[in-house]
Image 1 (cartoon, rainbow, N blue to C red):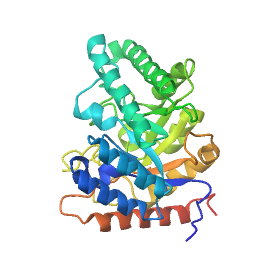
Image 2 (image 1 turned 30 degrees about the horizontal axis):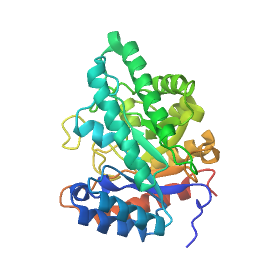
Image 3 (image 1 turned 45 degrees about the horizontal axis):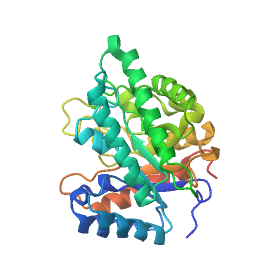
Length: 315
């Protein structure tokens, strides 16, 4: 079945968020990826670290057979290991650089076109400038490493930095779109395989609208996630937990996704030159305890179908 967005957009899924149990279970990783690969709604999938070399090989073969785009997510490596790409301590920062270089190697191994990361903790206004300098240096180093490791017959892996909240949950340096744009300007002066990733679930936590965010980032925006969050203090899902759309107390549902899609269209994102075959819109949704993942996935698709059908500029 041909969809109206085909030719303009590739829909993706963050695998380890939709199937949290698969992150440490190789058999479940293959089984759940096969489900995604057999669903024509999705043209892309984003994966994180897969420890087993043979499983990585099977994953690449499966996704190549399915003709799917692949993204690599290094955010979990940074968060799980408490790494800090913008640490003012160069010894600590070097640990993050080495982990990110290892992630680049794995991203190439599974056939990824992009690799997403995030910044380290926000160090306070007094140290913000130095931390931004350190983060710039880290990203340039990783981008240059990706260029050095690129296959002779292929394009270098593109690194994207995802923006997160600064004062609610993750409390990262990057951060507000204005700072993300400044960072991207600095990095792009030295390397060209870099851009910014935004997530609809993070914008309410940043108190930003899609329109203002995209206008600020401009051509630096090359990677997009969509999901939900909770800003209500005291709510059991408070913060950046990526619950399903439409939950009580949540920030995003059909209407918010409609506005986001319209902002993408009018910002020029769907016409932009990106490292993937087509611009990505990747769902990052985590089933709640006791929820059936198939039901949550079906509900996510329904939210997108309705939002897309109502968005101006999609006809």
